[in-house]
Length: 137
Image (cartoon, rainbow, N blue to C red; front, side, top):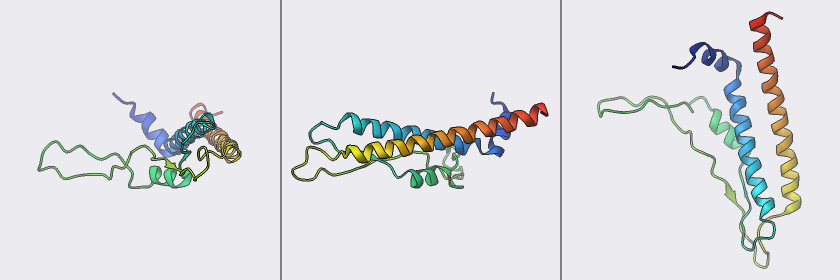
């Protein structure tokens, strides 16, 4: 059984959106790490996602879990689009070993790490606010 009070409390404070933000940052970090690890792999195509587009897709108002249809007479509810991000691949140019630009990857990695740190700090502040509201400190 789910804790309805915790679910209500977290949904009202923006915690689910920050959770999605951190999940997406973590996913992107893995993609960039894979690109760096394959710097010398012949034919490797570097991968990345458009963070802002994916975040908007994941948090848009209509992106809620839909009801399950177990009978043909049921009316579909909700708009379910909760799929994993589909990374874009950069084509390998003729004469290149692969499409990894290590300078670009390191820059993107630093930017992504900063975004994750900011998201984690915001989430920490949300939890501190909730704690203060509960304990009246």
